Image (cartoon, one colour):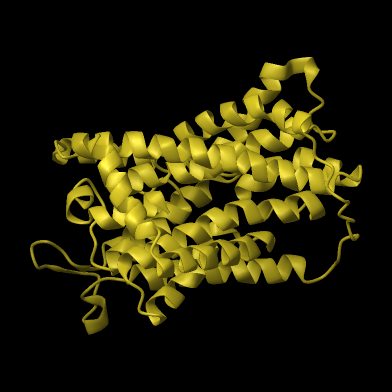
Length: 362
């Protein structure tokens, strides 16, 4: 009942006209950014953080807008996956396997609609999980000491091995560079580390500058280099003819994908990519020969879509309750909170309850 009361207070924040307006704006901009191949939600959130600061938004409004950008970009990435066979971001790769063949068969509208329905179901399941699990985990995290936090961060670093690409050395080097950048500044004992007498480095490297400079701009340059040349054959979007039977057929798949995606999202460092891959792989095993995966099976679109959208909401759980990002995008949101002088973690549910529950309700 206490959780329900907090949630009602959260709706009081989320339903304020200006918060609703910025939520709609964030979802719209996120969908546009997500539809551009190669950008993705992390870049979209990082690029729009300066907008939140320039408008002088309140912390809860800024976080509502940027989480809406996150949600919009998670769906927007599917547009280019289905119509162009170019993943809008990494979690959308699995959607290409059946979404693009559906579009080639003249069912582009159906693929986009199924993607939207599965995304909604996955997000709804994850939001319910967030409401139920986050307060419990926050209360449990209040008992954490140095040993528990050390084990938690070791788990977060260990998950890097599970999300590495073809070249694991790059992942290790990138993690080491990130740790080195984090040591710049004055430590807890007042000792200067790697400041080299430069006054601007005494407070460390600003998170926003590091993320936008090292991540967003580099991704934009890669996008320009890879995509500016050739074009793609124009895909015709047919008139939507989705029936109730089509929706009913993907419901079990969407529910399975939503639960799996949420579990994957809660794991620190896993993110939406893992939720997408696991959901698609399990669905392929569950259906076996009954499915026609890889040739335009609607369930091959629904499974990864439910999985990655559930994982994106699930990734907010460790960020809000433990101060540990569950994905790359929540790492950007974590930097925003720190920039607003808000400390993510279990105390946030008592010290900044209006922000936490306002975001969940929004």
